[in-house]
Length: 107
Image (cartoon, helix red, strand yellow):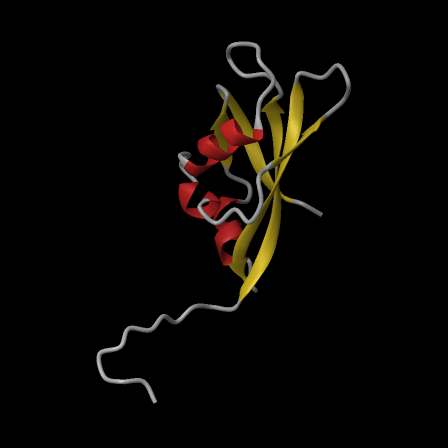
């Protein structure tokens, strides 16, 4: 039994949701290759910061082709078993490096 006044926390069971962000510029506005750190900062300060606050790993950058100027970014997010947090962002636009990108579920 817990002593009276002892704080406790109730949380939903954790799972991981996998999302991808399409058409992210591979180069930043200065022409430099985008970094995981820059992406993570941009995601955590975006309009979807509530979702990206729970990144379980650094975002993974996958250039669309060897000569492409865009890439797909994959993110793992700590979430409920129902994927409640990720669902808030799916299908929504997010602006990264001056470009409107789309958030989709990663298959």
